[in-house]
Length: 274
Image 1 (cartoon, helix red, strand yellow):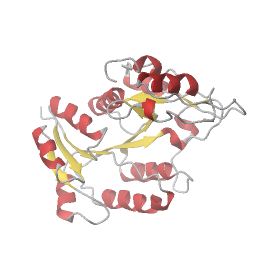
Image 2 (cartoon, one colour):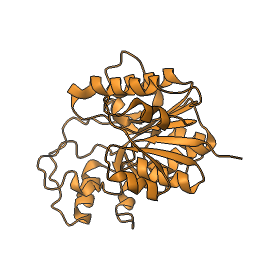
Image 3 (cartoon, helix red, strand yellow):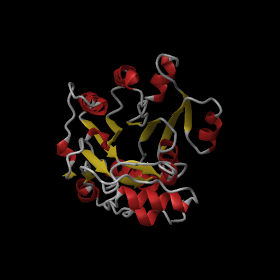
Image 4 (tube, one colour):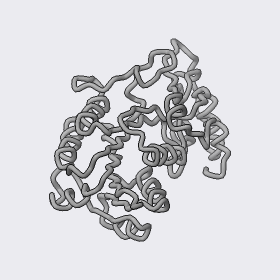
């Protein structure tokens, strides 16, 4: 039985290892990049490469050919600049408008930043996708869900692994706030494993939180992470009013029967993957 063709929009830190894993599993994979030099890299890994950039810098025929698949993994993170929020939504809308009928399933990479600090554990129902949401990502989740009934959203926690070592994030900084707040982290290998599980099990029409089930404190985690790299540890301020959220991955574990490779971010820091 022929495996589906999957288009991965954005073959960067997460998209490239995901696309590689899907190729290994026998899927036909199309991958996009904004860098001409990366075209050969994708091709060498068995990924059909597409040079796509937004807005309107790519020939429409290229986008149409790229989207000629059964599944789209939308993995383009928005800029941190709030001024570019409108252009990100517009770009997402232009991609969704170009979807062919043959593309029935969407997998959208979102973020746990959609949750405010409510000083408790949060689940997926604590932030609902709406067209009028204050959060850019919640508005984009809504667009995705309206485009296809078979749309699944994955809200990732803080990303670590590969070129992202958390020891660099706060090293040497002073008066860092919220030392006792829990961290919500996830390793690259678990990011890929979760996305592959969703695709293999065809878990569509769901929103999942995705972060490690254990939540050490910011002080403990970032101090050890900096020390792991031989960098100056951050100096934390005294704890004032505690502001935090503890992301629950319980739904993901239940629905996908997924076992985290790195359930403890602290233990992960001393693993061979770093």
